[in-house]
Amino acid sequence: MATTEQGASKPRAVQVQLASDRRSRSRSATRALDVLEYFGLMRRPLRAIEIARALDLHPSTTNQLLKTMVGSAHLTFDGSAKTYLPSPRLARFSHWISDTYGGDRLWRLIRNVQAESGVIVTLTTPNDLFMQVVDIVGAEPDARAFGGEQRGLSVSIFGSVIGAAYLATQTDREIARLAERARLAPAEQSSVYARLSEIRRRGFVDGPNADESVWSLAAPLKAELFAVPLVLGLAGPKTHVINNLNELKALIRREILLLG
Image 1: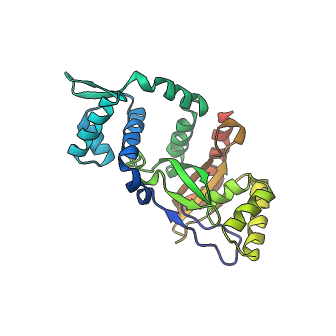
Image 2: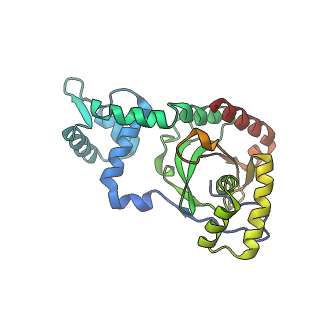
Image 3: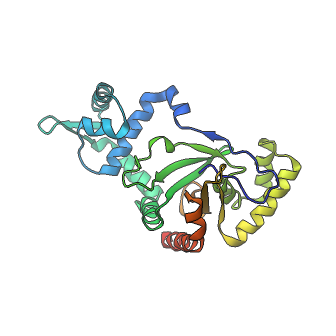
């Protein structure tokens, strides 16, 4: 969803950071978290080979990782069934996370929007001068849609559609602070402020991908509902999204209202 914001004579280039660029520094930790997240998605005991395939890991690497997690009591192992399961040790943590984000509300939101829209749907949150993908559902049924390398991917706040949706929720003072850190030229800043006024009025922002083959649509979620700012984004083939723009906006509006 690396997209350029409309309304500027010279669109600012969108910077993209892949999650894999950062994972090498703490690969074991992120792999362990990916394992736990996959359990949350599947909601049943899993065999090592299932986990290896889902996370694209070598079987020997997976076995060593799972043994380590059993040794630390984060997982339990059923020797007769040869399956793993998160241990009760994680129960309090999972309950707290569930309460913080309203149970399955966010997961149901992006699954429902994806099912009805047929395009890629993301949840992003600000991280310094970037918007980071914290969840994603792809257009394909499995979409290695567990997330693959897209979870953790970051695109710059300035110049992207999802970034513009987030900025529209911020004060002019905060936007100016971010613009100064991003070293935006005065002309760029003026263009940003003009665009944000329109976004606040409409409640949505849409625009092209950098190569204009993909069109994106984004809207911020209500800030008071969650512990962190979140933006709901859609991205799909340009013709499809533009031809169905009103329907997609109505879909997003309806699903956001259902959150509360």
